[in-house]
Length: 210
Ligand SMILES: *[C@@H]1O[C@H](CO)[C@@H](O)[C@H](O)[C@H]1NC(C)=O
Image (cartoon, rainbow, N blue to C red; front, side):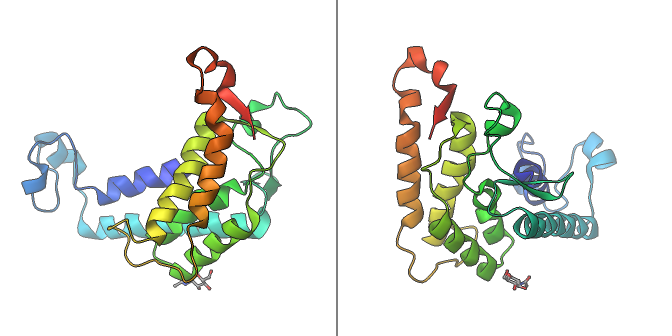
């Protein structure tokens, strides 16, 4: 799941044009006003809608197939169409092992997207799966950076959405939610903390055994 890809697509679609443009807030749709932008940068409302739909369809396609073929493993191996977790046999395989931590990474990664795309049922189902099945008591070594942005980041953002502290996404509260994601974040953060404890060893602790 290429979260960054669709987040940047979304950002491109949703932000009000070029952020460097000092007057961008005052410019009515279609946002782009410089000569170059006038010539090359304009998108019509119809194109905007099509782009939004394409991003949304790509998301549901990716998420649905991950859930069908790969969950509860970390990600979908698109060549073999099956799930993939850490490469236990080859710990040096950092291409896989930097990110995959036997914690249903794609599901965790997708939580806020489910909310953004507005399917509350699917969002709540995914949150429940994470609460019930994801844990960090795994014999794996993950990269601190990956675990921080993809897991801590997702869990914290999802907690904010569930407690309605994110004003952009709308009403997404879930009955019986009791801060479980915050507790999980705390657990993971504690496991990663040693990596930050000493600046001399920060490099050495680029990866951390959960
Ligand atoms: C929302 O998600 C639920 C559960 O996954 C699914 O059954 C339903 O069809 C989805 N609704 C829409 C409008 O896509």
